[in-house]
Amino acid sequence: MVTDVDYVINRVSTKSWGMHAGVKPKYVMVITLKGKCEYETNGQMIKLVPGDVCIFPPNNIRKSKVDEISPWHFISVSFTLKYLDGSDCYIGDLLPMVTHNV
Image (cartoon, rainbow, N blue to C red; front, top):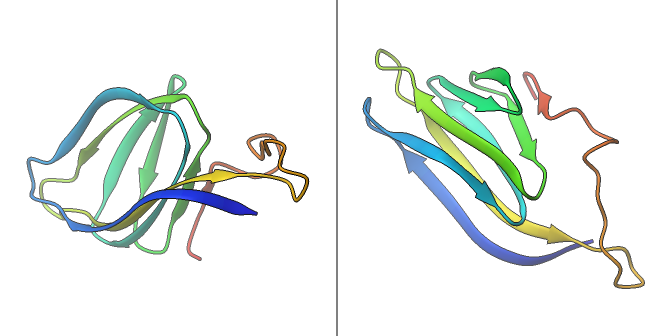
């Protein structure tokens, strides 16, 4: 179950918006509504376009940069997952990091 939601952000970025390399201690789900963004995570480049959903696992190192021609509009949610018995739930090995065209 989802517990401890830290934030829900609906952001329309500018063409210069980006995120410096950093680590978030919880899951972060990003839903792309419009525009484009590129993430670098675990040595892999991920390009997000409208309809894409990306779930970053806890303690994932990543940075991002928006497309200057088509700035990114997205919703981001930070949360914790727990099993019903209260123990930590890790789904990083069960789901793909990116689901395209949801």
